[in-house]
Image (tube, rainbow, N blue to C red; front, side, top):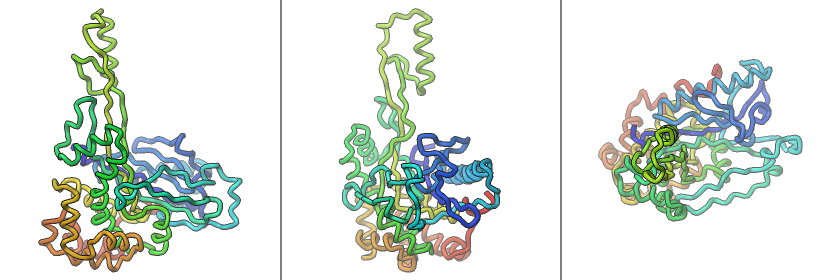
Length: 388
């Protein structure tokens, strides 16, 4: 499997017990004490429950997420709640009571404390959101998507990355040049808006809740560069193991056989993956498994297009004035589902052959059975539905 085929997500949902929404802190620990299972982990993130399915191919990620929801429900059941009284709410925004006594809640629920995000339309500049959590009576849930760009293996560099653009981007991240890396990846994140963002904006999600969230979180083009699965490999320069375990085994072997230390030079090599966390989608993406799979498919089409993101952006913008950055940002920010749907439907099959992502969208919009069931309301089985 190529690294660019690996995807992931870390969505958030609110918990309703009978007719009352309760903070996730009632049942789940914070991120420092995650609950692990075979398909991922769960913990609270502020008021919401955060689920982190293990990464892989899109369908496997959705399957892992389904199992995580079941495990989360069973975890609550073990604390004395009836199975059928538990509902997970994939809402972009939750309104909480102004009478809430925050002093009775854990410290992490009394503040908005996530890491900084960055704006792809401002060359990766930080997004500064300052909210007093004890005076702000809304909470927000995201459906963040992760796309792996490549893997760093010691001084071998990026053996599985052929694209010059991605190699340059990964080199900047590897060298710790964060500002330059965020500026370089920004056109790629904008392409996610042009495909994933517009597709999700075309859905009939509750618009007021989407707009409320995007005043603070999940702005168009919001992203983070991420490093995943960091390992330290202890190597001998004559033998280069692929895992830390085999490196330790080699070290023991050399000691047992009495080989002189000066025969080999010990080096420490790092191995990790670099990727993008696309933070614009809300928890509403969980309302339909097909939405998750389609979003992953669109992102992978962009990544596998083989063309420089800046050139692709120019191509998009030559097809229609509606593809200008300010227009796309407004459609997504205001969640104008009708206009987003009209824009997507206006793309011709000829355009779809030119622009990555629109091959999938054109097929979807022109297939009446799929269009009726996915875009205009009727749901396929969803990962959060009651019974999980």
